[in-house]
Image 1 (cartoon, rainbow, N blue to C red):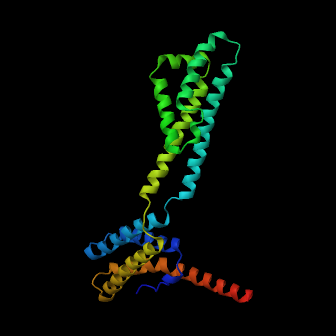
Image 2 (spheres, rainbow, N blue to C red; image 1 turned 30 degrees about the vertical axis):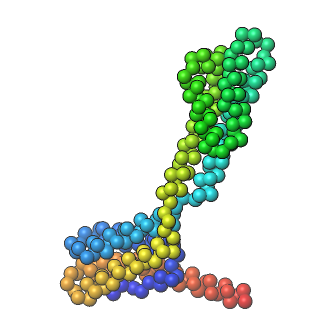
Image 3 (tube, one colour; image 1 turned 135 degrees about the horizontal axis):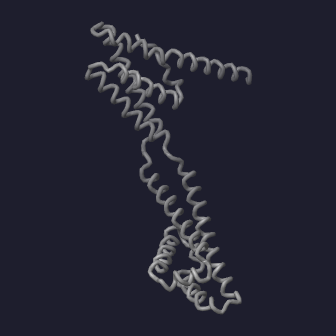
Length: 243
């Protein structure tokens, strides 16, 4: 008979690990039993659902990454604008027309475009890059005043932001709506159903493989329950000492 499990004392990671180990054991056994295969498959499904609910990405962390990428994008744009402005003051008459051309480009798309929303800034910078890509005159002006590196940094920072921003939105859209508590209950139920079936089959003594399964599962349950009871005892003792 399979050992009793104190589900109420299990932590989230403990029931998840136990379910994974149960599935691994049954995969190794390779018993031709449709009911057992169905019960094992149900645990695998619940593990996947639980994984999405319990280990879903942190919205806060993703948002911080977006904010950091946006700061770098802003800095890249400001650096390019500042460089072009500085070049207009250089004592290089041959740069005058190129600087005027690039200054008009920046004015057209907005010197403070970084103050807009994420999507508005992305739209304006994309249009700016599109204008440069479609103009041999603009590209030549950037190269002539030695602004290629400044422009490349600005463009790379904008590209990095778009990638991080899209990744954040994709993760939020795919984030499971299942609560961890509900996933825990469903996984526990799937494990309980498997244990009941194995117990019944072992008691009927129709297939000696079920005795082996019982032994293998108990090999996982016994040390886990010992660890949990020890933890509970320590916790109760600490409470008594505190009182």
